[in-house]
Amino acid sequence: MVQNRFVGTWRLVSFELKDVNGEVTYPYGKDTIGYLMYAEDGYMSTVIMTARRPKFSSADFLGGSTQEKAKAMETYISYCGSYEIKDKKVIHHVKASLFPNWVGTKQERFFEFTENYLLLTTPSFKVSDKRLTGHLIWER
Image 1 (cartoon, rainbow, N blue to C red):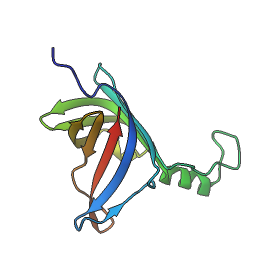
Image 2: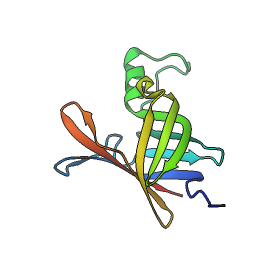
Image 3: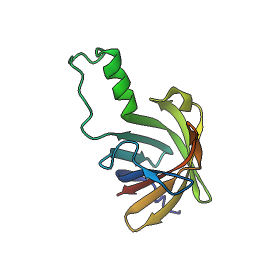
Image 4: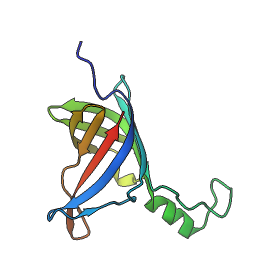
């Protein structure tokens, strides 16, 4: 039986977006916090957020002003679902996500393992008028 190198918990080291000219931006800051978990049963889950996110003025879990809720959405992403490995891609079949448009989609990531690191790269995608590629480095 071949060991699945994905299985386990990974901590985010770096999350960069690169445009076609090589310009790098950090969508959640250089000190982004994130975890990625792959289970043996074929399911995965990930969360990524800006460090030191602003707290709501209320302790009510369902409370918060419209501005507070918008800022919380802008500084956090998560999704989960099943996954499969095909060639040099891991494909996440999204079942639940903070970003509703991802539910029911496939999020493909090119992967590479080096020592205790997992490098994931997204296919290029368009944001506003820019073509970007995501580069995430995870450490076991």
